[in-house]
Image (cartoon, rainbow, N blue to C red; front, top):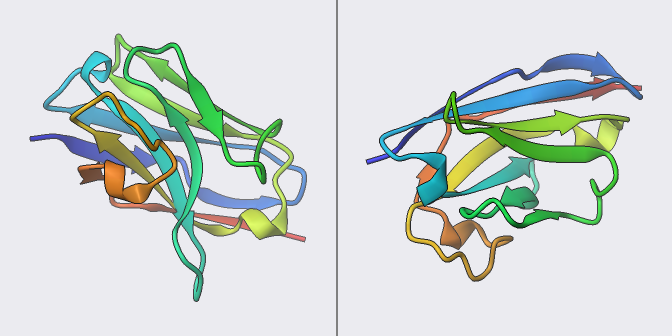
Length: 126
């Protein structure tokens, strides 16, 4: 059993930055592939970023590459999503997710993940 607790969302103007946190319990990060997804009203959930269980690979959607960075702190068993140069198009509810059965074959597919955080709202004003 894995529990994920998210924090760090909020309101920011275009060009600003936010850092999302996702604290995991029940398993260590070395046993999990961690993913980030987002969903805007009326749209499908989409992949944002992922961090493989072995810590050797990080992956990003083309829409956020160069602006977003995912990282982990094994001491705190927490993953982060640093979001820079935010755009209004980034407005969405952001979810962290965990694949408890790595290796993760398709890191961009929501169906690979077993556990989900509660979601946190990110709003970017123009």
